[in-house]
Image 1 (tube, helix red, strand yellow):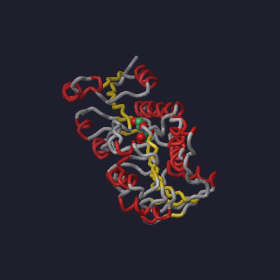
Image 2 (image 1 turned 180 degrees about the vertical axis):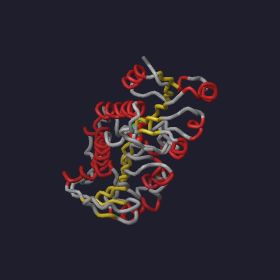
Image 3 (image 1 turned 90 degrees about the vertical axis):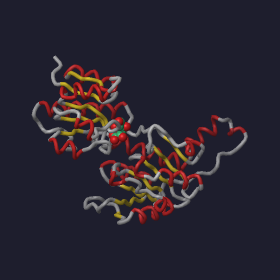
Image 4 (image 1 turned 120 degrees about the horizontal axis):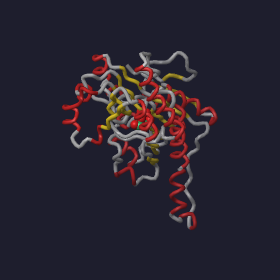
Length: 313
Ligand code: 8YV
């Protein structure tokens, strides 16, 4: 018998939607022709909000749900959430950290390998028939190189662990040094970029990191350096990145995230030294199933009066 009323902001995995519908009374907001009018008329009915890292929950939405007690988000990123607004109202916010670390780190490594060795570019070369008449250009060696990680959190550490099989050296930059990691801390991002062959962005998005990877940082990375971003497009100055790539002031970039998804700047499409992914770092059957379970478990814990399994607030 469905009980508590939940508002769902956008489509999620069909299996998750089915299971939520068995336990709760779920209303799909994105199917409403006039969401604002719907929220004004019926916003007070909902105690729970199901959303994702992509859809988030801003202050206006939280304000339009006066009975809201719990938010359960599919994803680890919290940059699209107004956590202060939730905190002020005593609303619990659940999310899905940890379960996606491996897949996101795997994708970072895949992008790093791809952009350095030209895997996608070589695939295009074969498909175009160019192999019949020519030789694919030389690529860049990965093993033994230096990896700088911006944001050595749970995902950053999973990326760092993957480098050991490639005999790579790791350094990192965070707001502050960590005590319990075997990697050298670079006190400035510029210093990290100067040192790195590969600069990998694994930090959170949002106001605290917006535009951190600026023209100056890209120039510090230099013409032999590669950028990999599996975090948020907002962490880079995208115009500066395009300029650095077009003018070969950096060697290349592997990007899973962009500033205005799903829009990918046209200038990037023409470049063979750029690997472009449609924000798929956590997008495997296994990890998405684990994320879905965490969305459910956070809700179940809340409605059973227990602490959330993973609480952001
Ligand atoms: C997902 C993500 O694409 O978890 C995140 O923060 O960016 C990705 O795992 C996202 O959750 C889907 O909305």
